[in-house]
Image 1 (cartoon, rainbow, N blue to C red):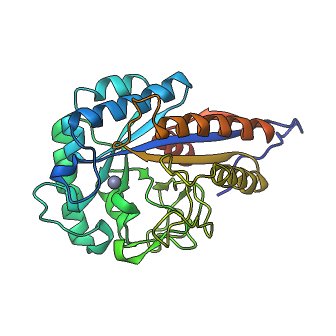
Image 2: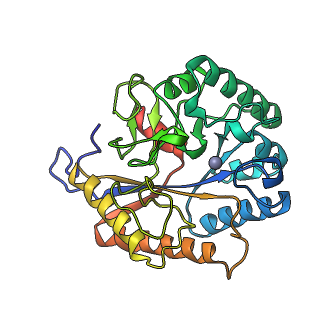
Amino acid sequence: MKWRRLTSSLGVVLMANCYIAWTMDCERVINESPLLGPKNEDESEKSITGFVEILEFNDLKATLFFVPDSVNVHKTLIPNIKEHGHEVAMHLHPESFGDGHYNKPLGNYSYEEQRRIISEALKAWTDSVGDHPGTFRPGNCSANNDTYRICKDEGFVGGSFSIPGRNRPELYAVWVNASRWPHRVDFSNKILEGKENFVEVPITSLPGFNVENLPPTGHPFHLRIEYDTGNFHDFEKVISSSLDAQMDQGGDSFLCCVTHNYHPYWDSSSYVRQNMLRLINTIRELTEKKGCKIKPFTIMDTVTRFCK
Ligand SMILES: [Zn+2]
């Protein structure tokens, strides 16, 4: 799928848009989860609201991917978040859902098992907040060739499943050679662009660019706000090359950043908050330099744009 061309039918040169999505995975508190998570509910809330406040101050939009337990804990925040134009979406790690009965990453399971797990999680999620979420992100980007179809069958219209170039077979998160930009999916092969009415919005990465002090292997550098490589040029390299690659294809471009609710976005002296502000400024500078206009987008906004 091509982006809109830069030249209109009258030959007038149009300014390219750069659509930017800022996403946060909102995990369950750590003592109820075998995975990473916030220390407690209070810190989780402060992290989420701190992240959203930074975006609001900068006229940007958040997509918050909540696991079912987290959306239940924070359900009083949800109406206010939505009223301000941000998206509340669903995240799921089977390993931290419910009583821990499902103890493997999502992509490990068969069609029937995944369908059952996602359906149960969806029920818990909607029992907490009412509305059905429109988009989905699997924990660890774990998915197999059935996962997109299952999510469509469960009523989602798209999501952010991938980090192109990620190669973590033990997590069933293999996205080597996956399409790097938003696209309609193929239900038979998750790394291909297809024609289905279901849109994938990848987290922006630079496949093959692995930074030495960031374990583990099989983990290309991507726009993860909490990354501390000691060299901010790593972020600039990913942003700049991603903008160039997309603009070369016909004009508009897309960036998707990711973070988690266990970082202290409420603390103005914290590394993550400073990194996020620096990232916002860098994206502004680079888009301006390349002649793009920033358009704040949620993952759902992106899906809608691609389903036209
Ligand atoms: Zn997660």
